Image (tube, rainbow, N blue to C red; front, side):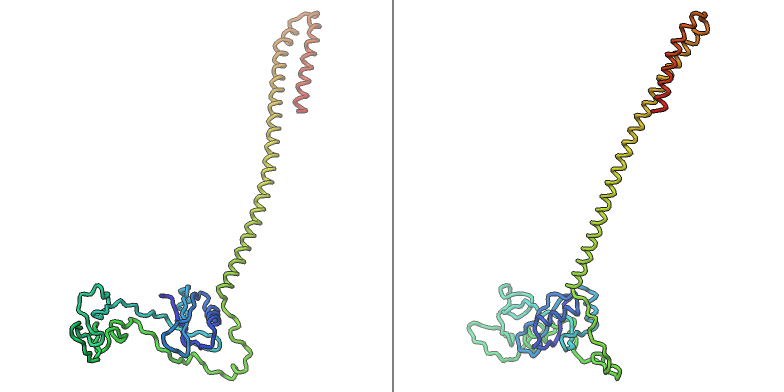
Length: 289
C-alpha cells in the first residue's frame, strides 16, 4: 500500500468504468482501480488505486487534485484500516482468548466476571489499553492512533483561479493535449520494436548476400592460385630440363668438338642438332607456358 492513492468524493452517478478510464487517462501508471465499499451510506464514492511509477506518484500527491468528468476532486494517500489481534477475555490487544491467562472481564467496565454471580455493569467505559474513559477497542485510544494523520480537505485558491476578460473569450480548448495512456505507450513500443526487427532482418539479408559474394571471390582466388601453382611447377620442370640439356651439351659435345678430327667433327653435327631441338622445345614451353 505504499504507492496507493484514493480519489475522494466521486459523484455516485458516475459509472465505475468511466471513473477508471478518467483516472488512467490522467495517470498512465494507475492500476487496480477499485471502489471502496463502506459499511455506512454515503452520498459520494471513494476510489482506491495503485501507482506503479514513483515519480508520477509524487507528482499526483503534490498536485492533490484530479479531474473526473466535470468535477475537480481531491486525491490523497490510502490509509489502511487497523488490523488488530485482541482478546475477548481481558480485551487487550496482541493475543487471543485461548492464550490468555487473565480472568474474564466486562467489555465495557472491565470488572471481573464471575459465573456464580450475575454482573451488573455500570456502563462507564474503561479502556484495557490505556485506562482511559472509552471502550477498549475505540479508535480514539492513543494505541490505535496512526502516526500520520490524513490531511484535511480544504478548498484552495489555486484550484479555482478567477477568469480574466481575455480568458472569457479564449477559443483554446481544455485538455487538448492528453497524456498518453499505458495502452498507447505499449502500442508505440510495439511499433518501434517491429520497425527495429524489420531493420535487423534487412541488415541480416545484406550481410548474407555480402558473404555469398565474398565466398565466390574466395573461390575464384583459390582457383587462380591453383593455376599459378601449376604453372610455377611446370616452369620449374622445364627449367630443370633445360639446365640438364645445357649441362650435357657442355660436358659432351663442346669438349669433343674441340679435340676431334675433321672427320669426327662431321659426326658431331647430328648430336648438336639434337641438343638444339631439345633447347628449342624447352624455350617454347617456357615462353608459351
